[in-house]
Amino acid sequence: MPLAAQHSRSFGHETWQIRTQGTSPLFQKFAEWNALREILFPVLRSDSDEGSTYPVRKVGWLLADRQDCGGVELAGAMAAEKVTLPTAVIMFDGEPQLCKPPIEVGAWAFDQVALAHSGHDLFPAKVEFGILNGRHYAEI
Image (cartoon, rainbow, N blue to C red; front, side, top):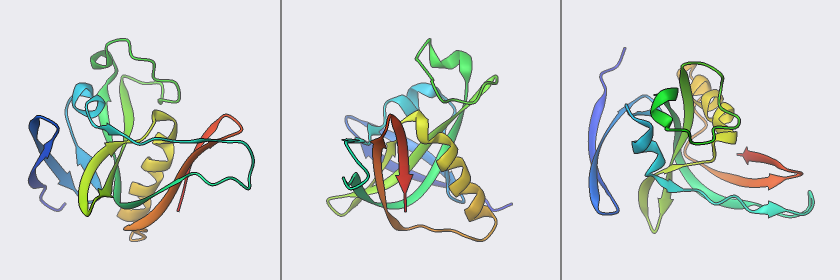
């Protein structure tokens, strides 16, 4: 197993210590994930509309204790004591920033990490995000 790397990065008014291992940022608390910048998903009227496209460097997820989530609605989260929360490192103004996609794309993030660990890392890539017919999507 590769050693985890430590990175110091400023997010807002605080400096966060982020541990990354492979493609997955590792946190210990829901509050850390919840404080990340949100990725906006536009609501599309039809298949011909386009979502928001971002240059994504990597995708990961946070495994948090459900009880740490403090009653926050986690529709789409896997039912268990632990909750899988998606993350993405996105380039904004030439700088990478760790962000939180909506919980509804958690399974997609989980799959991307699994692919990377099996030798099929698709990132960096441009990813389109949106909501079509009431469903959140992420498409490379």
